[in-house]
Amino acid sequence: MSKRFPIPAFDYERFKNMDWAPPALPAPAAGAGKGVGAYPVAADAAFYERFRLRGPHQHAVMCVLPKGGARLVGRSHAWAIQYALIVDSLDAAAAKVLYEWKTPRPMNTRLGPDNGVALATEVVYAVCAHRYADYWIVNRTLIDDRRAATPPGYAVTSTSDDSINDFHACNLSFSWS
Image 1 (cartoon, rainbow, N blue to C red):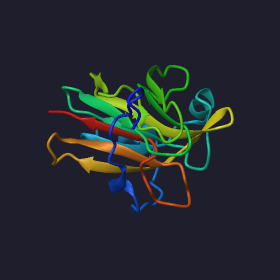
Image 2: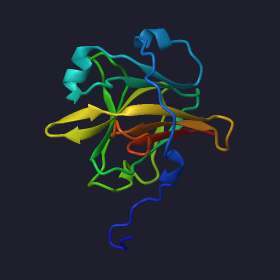
Image 3: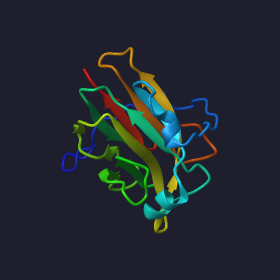
Image 4: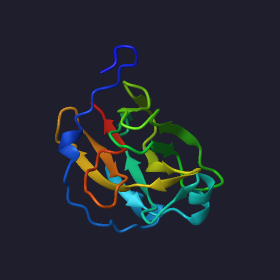
């Protein structure tokens, strides 16, 4: 590891060889009222167009957080430049970007601030993607539920390679106390 440009630690090995099946993608309103957790949802074409998101796995993850909010930390381990988009809505015209992070270069674990950020809202929508030319291809995602862990939380894990099931490309961890 470089002393001049240290990169955050990321234990990516535990995200290798995971089972994946395409998620059912209800509209965002269908996920409303669900408890704390992460739920894959569909967005409309205008949302994907606004953020230059393409590919066969287009979806967002509705992240329902506890009333006190949560800490969001991003990490990556991938050859392609990774992109994490966190918005307050999937309405293409009204969505406000809360965070828009990308890895500075391939094979760099830094995705957002080293210690993450505080989220005070109860619902956000996350999209994990990787760069291709001048747009982003949405990654396949899995939810890693750690609500019984200490501290409790969950992670949105993703892979940018359709041929392997290593879900450590663009990962977003949500935790709270």
